[in-house]
Length: 229
Image (cartoon, rainbow, N blue to C red; front, top):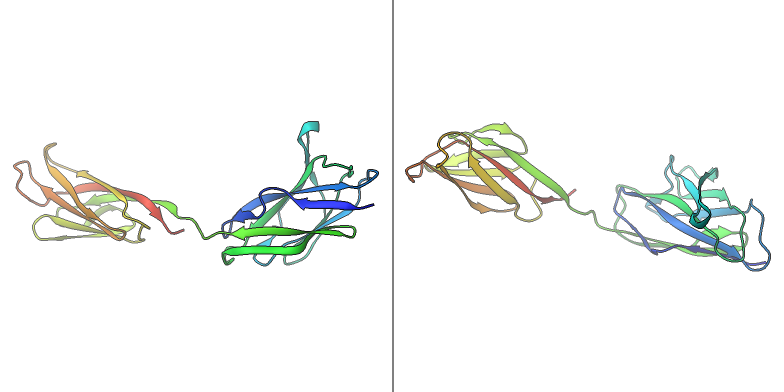
């Protein structure tokens, strides 16, 4: 009797640092089917753990089966977990879904454990890739007074230079210059508020009165883009 055990697609499984996901395992046997009770062992590489609240499930979608399985044992560091297999046929008849979490401080890169999956005397590799943290959306908005002081909002500082030049400095830089919109907060609908320039760290705003003459005005703005997580 010979078992076959494999990590399902995708292989490697890709996670960001701190992310929680699931990977799949397929098992079958040469020869006669095997009754439930064989122990499957999962050995995870450095930087990945089976979370304390993680689940292992057996799924056979054709048969409408999707059920959690009890954990036989879990090492304290979370890198080794064991559970009992369901009945094993001579072809894949369903699969196991196993939770996995990348530690928040895990270094990006590929990780493979040659004997990451084991059942009986059979073992197979288990592969993961920890990607670099992906940027997240950031929105900064508020109101700036005619004197350059922040009236409302957070995540930025503001100052006025010259007659009507305002500089907004973002507390957390964007990964690329954000989209910035600005409008007069008070006064005539014909007041002029211009976004003169933007960078990852700041935006420069010009204001003018209804006559077209540059003059300081209170305005509101919003900056939207991506920032490091």
